Image 1 (tube, rainbow, N blue to C red):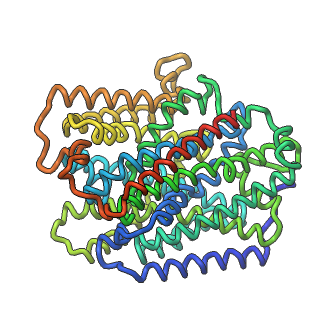
Image 2 (tube, rainbow, N blue to C red; image 1 turned 90 degrees about the horizontal axis):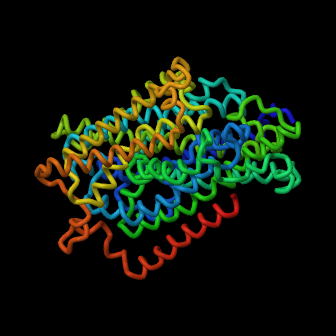
Length: 551
């Protein structure tokens, strides 16, 4: 196998059918309510749990995951290859339980459109402005640019389309239907794309295992460590200490406080639907180990046995597709990759436009009409895409593979935000001054580490700065989080200034008898909560079982 197969006419027909299906769903969904903020940015707040959960999963599993997870798993074991990268996906299931039971009630009762808006209600306008601008910059660095780059890899490796041509083409196609219908179109196209990307990934795993003679053939062709989720504390990429204590910090930021994910929960028809949607996503997040990570191990096994030529690890999945799959199925899997790319991009576009419109533009123009704000949201993505395209050439300065790049940059952004949100809902004493100080200190520490990592080659061996530059990013995340919490607590206790009017929406206020009910609260019956509690326990049991099996 040389991994140089190409798509035939049947494959291209399948891809054409995929585009027709997506645009059909987009047109049908986009005809409903595009004139108000509530409809365009939150799909009218009447979405059911299945669509919420499917959209959370599909928007998260972008091409950077399909390419990056498989690419990281296909790297040599001594460089972090194998299944440990799946820990980020598995850990997400636990943190989604926090979203379902702790954060979602606050968000829905407050009636906010965005996460920066929630920070203003809890603290003050300062943290809101910080998170709004940081989110916009973060979308360029860790979402839009990485997704576009991954799409370019897929087009170039699998379809023979030049990198930049494919990347720009898919951006234009995705942007068209996102601008057309807002979040409602994104949600329903995500639901369709979830089935396509799962089906495509399942095909790759099945054919790959068949080529190796089954699971035992795969085991025989790779080092035993490749199929273990756990690595030593000094491992350069996935130390167990970083996985257990650092990865959850990134996960809290991403799954519980990032507009990209939480916007789907905000669109739910009530708290019961929002909670169950998050629980559904928690179960779905256990699938990437089998559907996206194991194909990378399969590619490594085929490469080790001389049956697959793998030029670089990030090309593992496209190489498997072209080398293993027959005509027609290659088109289905290619459609799955496109689905992942488009769902992630469309979700990012809509979330970014929501923040730019609600948290930045509307504050500058408070009298702007709703149709005008919707138009601003439709136009906001153009500049973001341009900035992302300019950033792509600089991505090779950070991290070793695409997925590790994504996680490492997030490790420098996430800790102070996670600290401010967690203490904001758990501790009534957290003040606006404390939050502002924690965000400032955390940002300074994160930026310092990023600059150190980018200039590590120019730092002397054995120096403190070189040691900090080389330290695992998950351990760095733990340190930044601890520092942010310490600063927030200290400043809040030393200067317990009165909160701004309307702030202080903390745990006691949410739980008080007079607290505003969440939308659709009548549907959240005791029986529904008992069912969801059992489903939550099932997530924990499933994760413990995976940890035990792959150990």
